Image (cartoon, rainbow, N blue to C red; front, top):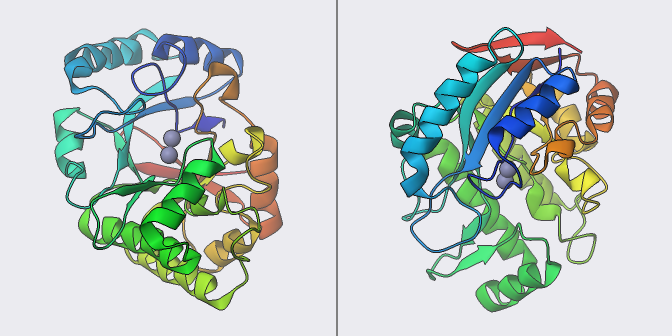
Length: 279
Ligand SMILES: [Zn+2]
Ligand SMILES: [Zn+2]
């Protein structure tokens, strides 16, 4: 079974119409394709869904689900951004957009005593470094802790199904500021895993960093996947595609990491809940 539950189209920061991804997915033999635009945010930006397009998008999703039923299961999800005090409640988004499932992600970290946001996820490491210096005084431990605290707050306060790119905060680190085996970092990872386990949240193995050549590992990588296996946390492999050819980007590598961690089943959306299939 071939699935991708994390896809961005022109309705957020992807490059093509939703139907183009469906054609590509059918050609590649996918069984399931889930669209997950970035949720609307209350400030100007280039990446999130624009609320004016809601009706058009919902009508299009319904039409596409119907048109391709029997060929591929199309689902309408959302990658909801959690920014304390700014982002919309996830359950409200799910209702308002008639969504099938939700990914919860942190891209913008709010510094404690500051309303400015640290954009951790852009293509340019200089944006990351600038936020680190200006908002956290260059203290990487403080900054990374804020990222995971915000993730914890999201898990505890919002309803969602899949945790998006668990440790993407490491993307622009590249060994420059910290090592992933440092005890303070490891304890943030463990704390996050315990919360995920407690709330029955699925962890995606996100391959985007590999095919964009911004990371040597998936988000999360093998060490965390081994812990995930021990804790029996459900996983799925997602490409986080922004272009049609990225739909199965580095899937072979993603599944090889699962295998190396001893994980032999993944979760998929089956229309009215979640099922498992062996890999
Ligand atoms: Zn994301
Ligand atoms: Zn995404």
